[in-house]
Length: 113
Image (cartoon, rainbow, N blue to C red; front, side, top):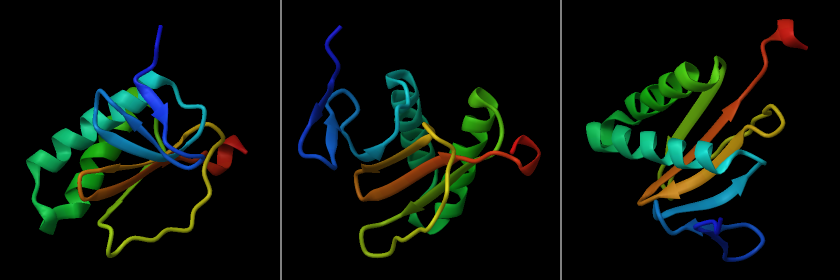
């Protein structure tokens, strides 16, 4: 099956079916990438720019429900955006959706380590 994801350079790829620009990602499944973009689009449509925290909360709650707890979501715009974080292997996706920069990752609880 041919993927709709094609490489632009070593750091980014466009998903032709979702129009999302994936900048960095781990070995997340294609299904997970598409699901993340879908729930991000819905959250962005639901709230305006003044409610970025609500967009994050919606995305996080949907990921917790589908893939288990301890998901984190950061949403910003090209002018104001920065993070420093640690994440669990194979559960990190960084993409752009229109003017929004979105980073999604999962961590382990201290009990899991």
